[in-house]
Amino acid sequence: MKGFDFKRALDILQDAGALPKADGSAERAKPQRIGGRLLRLYPIIADKLGADDGA
Image (cartoon, rainbow, N blue to C red):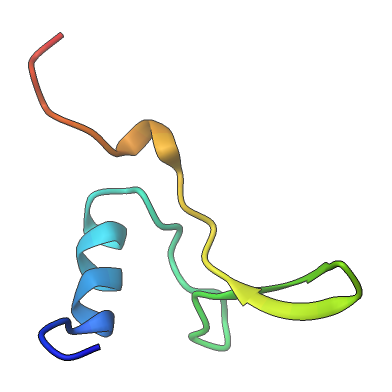
């Protein structure tokens, strides 16, 4: 997509703790089979997302 730097977005999510560190092969996406198709998905930790409201 124009205007978005995907690698930078992944780096920011990883720095925030919302994306686990890459495995030994430096791949952050994990292959998952869904509906018979093998997809590369990024395991986002939802609890690490959201506003930092101090609560």
